[in-house]
Each structure stands twice: as structure tokens, then as C-alpha cells.
Amino acid sequence: MAEYTGGSDGTDRDRTDSTYDTAVHYFTGSRNTKSSSKLDYLARQDSIATLRLQFVFNTSGTPTGSLPPEVLYFAFPSGASGTASDHLPVIIDVILCTLTYEPGDCNCDGAINGFDIDPFLLVLGGTPPYTDYYALYPDCDHMQADVNDDGAINGFDIDAFVALLGG
Image 1: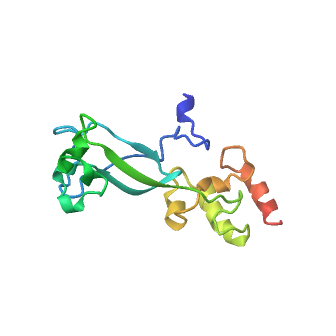
Image 2: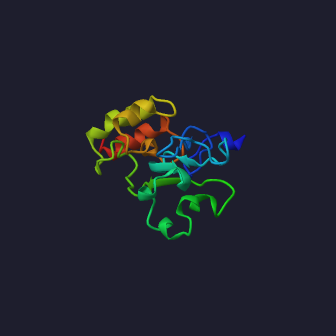
Image 3: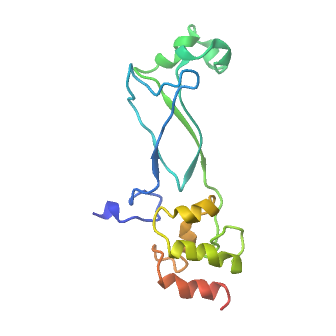
């Protein structure tokens, strides 16, 4: 049961922010990685990693002029992606979150002030996956509203938030 209770420890125990890849081959649009099926799936946690690029690496469907330079040194470049494995690799490039903000900086502008009240209330009154909050603050983390640092966003954060605002 603990795996479903959620958490802020970098896991996706509440299963609200994990995404499977939807990678396709750039030139053919195929999702297949083994014959006529998808053999492997990659998952990433949206709140930690932002997708930059994803694709199925299939050299046999890629024009020679579009192959990466490293592949051109193979004896048979168009067969390179099938040489090392029995299926095609899925490549996912992600951007890891490197910015950190103080609890209470709910709009992630680097300051805790009156501009944080509306985003704090959006999270406090919202439910996972906090779509209203992320629509306005896509680069922020809703856990900024966990001002008392107990791992939950609830009424117990209000007094701590007001104290941060100097009230």
C-alpha cells in the first residue's frame, strides 16, 4: 500500500507524473523496436525530468546523409542499429531539473512575497496532478507549497506560509 501513498522523494509512488515514451522513428514514424512490435518502453518522472527529444534509432530506415558521424565508420552504416542488439534502441534525452527554490516560493521567481499567494492557493485547493497550477507555472514544483516540510500540502502549511510572508 505504501507505493500508492505518494511522496516527494523522487519516486512516483502516487503514479501521477510518470510518462512512458512515445518515441517513433523520425523518417518512417514507426514505433516498432523488434519486428512489428514495441519491445522496450522507457519511463521518466515528469516532475524531475523534462523531455527534450525521443526517437527509435533505426539506421536502416534513415537516409545515409542523415546518419550521425559515429555510425558512418561502421562497415555497413545502415545496419548499425541492429548490430549490437536483437532490437532497436529507444533514445530519450531529458533535461533534469537543476533549479531549486525555497519552500513558499510558489511562483518560482526566487522571492517569497505576495506574488506567491495565488499559486500557493492553487496548490492548496487543488488535487494531483495540479493542472491549473502547472498551466500557469510549468517550471515550478507544486511541493513549494509544502511550507512546513511535512511531505503533504494541506491546511497545516497556511500558518508557515503566512509567517514567511512576514505576517
